[in-house]
Length: 108
Image: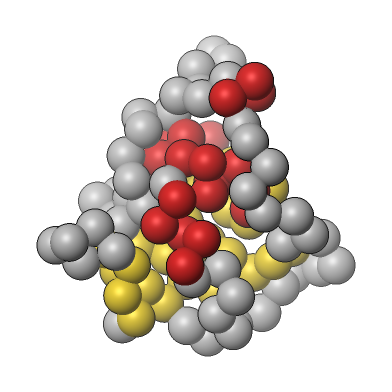
């Protein structure tokens, strides 16, 4: 597998959120630069996991089934890719959000 070419460099990541832990996000966001189109929070898998899962929203089942198309990131990193997540990161486990026409993330 070739190394991923991330849309943002480490130097471009600002401290927007601290203490939220890890999340899973697809390469459609971190490599292709698509905004978060759908996200949900489940019960964390461990002490480091925030429970957040971020997707562009256009991923196919086959794409999602391929482990190399996703990664584990700090929630702060994903907030740097799409600041709309700043408005939802405190939502409890069991919630989900979808991108609206105005660009905000609304509960679904």
